[in-house]
Structure formats: structure tokens, C-alpha cells
Length: 433
Image 1 (spheres, rainbow, N blue to C red):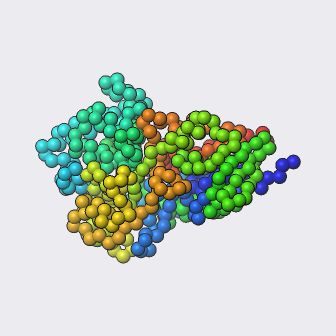
Image 2: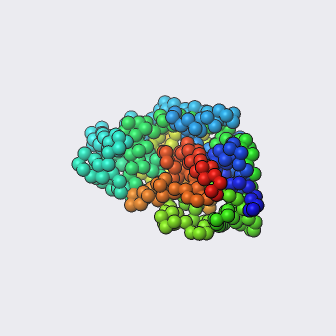
Image 3: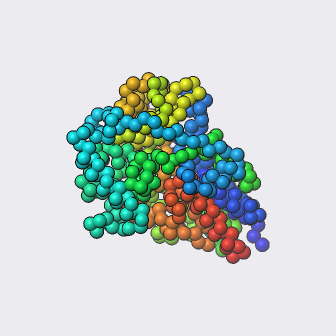
């Protein structure tokens, strides 16, 4: 009889992995979890601001009203839902100048409205399940840049669409699917402002705290600093190989990994062709998220546009020292260096020229070896790389991640749902594995 180190192994201690461990353990299965980092949480990452005692989210954080799974786990494990600040003040950068009255000059407003009305119409059609626009052209296979050219978007409209793209599509507009924006835009019935109105809560004391409590309650044996280098699946079990030596033998395995991190693991036998191609191609999520501490900025101020660098900023809340904490998003396109004080201060002053810059902090997800990107952004010419069907489980192996979840990819809720599905698959296999 084969001797197992545990019934199941989980690779990755993000929300997908923690959920898989939770679900397997509560069905009486023993679970061992391997996490390459020295912490749990994955791309949910809350920590203290570099200069101060405020705990901030440097990865995914927002919770929407209909995300019941994460809300249930938060309630179960004593995590508070912190309401986001309502938007009280609005600013726009039209690509040329900061505006406090409207997204475009009076002379350009008609063209701006025509563009945004057309985008809203396409959003409603796409969210209703229609594959074609009113002129019979497909939504699929079109990059954001190509889509904006198709609708003859004005420069002012492009400036605003790009700003909201940094928190939706978050990839190169020339290669990332426009449907990423249309879907997110649908939270406001075609109005991009609705995206933010939909982002109603964050977690306190943080996403990582919820993952920690989920794993503690599961009873899974968690190994930090344990990067998995290989997975060998045979007729009698799965061998999990750890960097620096050591293996674990289990009945089945959940690979709860971001899409762009899968390629770092050697699978034996090799993954099916479609999965290998998807892992090699990866997704295009390349957002930059920064936190800025400043004086003289009103909490609840939202500023968008500009077309470069940090294109979206909101004054999120007051810091413990009375300054304002501002979160900003842009694209990692080489034109803005989030590690450079001059670049970050310039981004602040473009939206808030009256501000006094104090400090900033960020995390580089694009070069993080265990993430290799931010939230999922599908290539326009290969959306299948992040489709749930591409990552269907088989035999002793199941995949789980917000990147390729069946429901609303990219969200914490999606990661939890994918962990549930992966564990359900392995449990249904029963004695066959």
C-alpha cells in the first residue's frame, strides 16, 4: 500500500489555494500546502506603508456587492469589511491639461459624448451576450486600441478610457482584448464611473489576514519558502518536488497558481498541449499600483486621464498622521518608473498641483517571480489562454486561480470559486485516485 505524506497537496497560498485547503480539510482530508513566498496571500498583499503605521493593500483588494463567497469567509473569520470612501470631488486630465469642470473642453464635449455613448451601447450589447456590434463587427479578437479606432474615439475620450483601463484591462492596449474593458464597464451600465461605484469594500486588517485565518482554520500543514519545481503524477500518486531538495507524496494535487507562474514548474507527464501553450503564452496583466502619502488633498477626490504614467488616482482615506493616502494605477509600459521619486511626485502633481508630496510605496508584481504580472488580461488574439475550459482538471491534478476561473476572472471572489471547484473535482474522484 502506498504511503502518503498527506491526502492532498496544494501549491500556492493565495485565496484559491487557501480555499482548496479549507474545502478539502473540512471533508476530513489531510492537506499539505507549499508556498514559495515567505508569506501567505498571493496577489492579495496587505502590509504597513513604508513610512507609517497604516496597513495598505498592495495587491487585489476590492469587494463588490454581489461577491458572497469572500463576504462569507470574512464574516466567518472575523475580518471587517471597510467601506470605500464615496467620491465627492471629480477631476479629469484631457491629455493636455487638468480640468475641474468636465472631461473635455466645451468645444470637444460633443465628440466626447458621442464616443462614450457608443462605448456604452457596445458595453450593453456585450454584457447581454451579443457577439457583434450594431454594424455586425465582432467584439472578440479586437484589442482596445483597435476598438477605439473602430469607434473613432476622440483624444479626450481615449484619455478617459485608458484611465479606467488601468483598473480593468491593465495590459498593453495594442494587444489586450477590448472585451476586458467592455465587461468591466458594464458594472455602470456603460458608464465607466460605475466601476468605482461597484467597488464598495476592502478587507480590514487586510486580504492576507483573511487567508491566514482560512488556512489556520483548515488545519493544513503550511510550508513557506517552499517553491515547487516539479510535479510527477503516476498511477499510484503524485510526487511534489521542492526547490533545494525534498519531496511530498500525495493522492492528488491542486496547483493554485497564477497563469504566468505555471511555466516555472516541470510537470511529468507534460501538461496537455493546450495548457502548455497557454502557460507559455501567459496573460498580459501589467498594471502599476502605487500608494502616495500627501498633504492638501481632499479624501474622496477621483482624478483620471492623461494618457501616460499614473492615469487613475483616488484619495482613499486619511492616514494615521493626518495626511491623505492616495492610490494610483497606471501601466508598466516603460514610460513611468514607480521606483523613482521624481516620476511619482510628477504623477501626483499632474492631478493635484496643490498637494505636498510626503512619501510613496508600491510592489512590483510584473517582476515578482511568483506572480509575473497583475490580474488577468487576455490577449486579443488568444483569449483561450485564460479560459476555464483550457485549465480543466484531469486525473490527480486540478488548477485553481482567479486568472482562469469560471466566474468573473480577476477577482478575489473568482479565486475562491476556483478553489472550490478544484477541491470538489478531487473529492469526487474518491478512491479512483
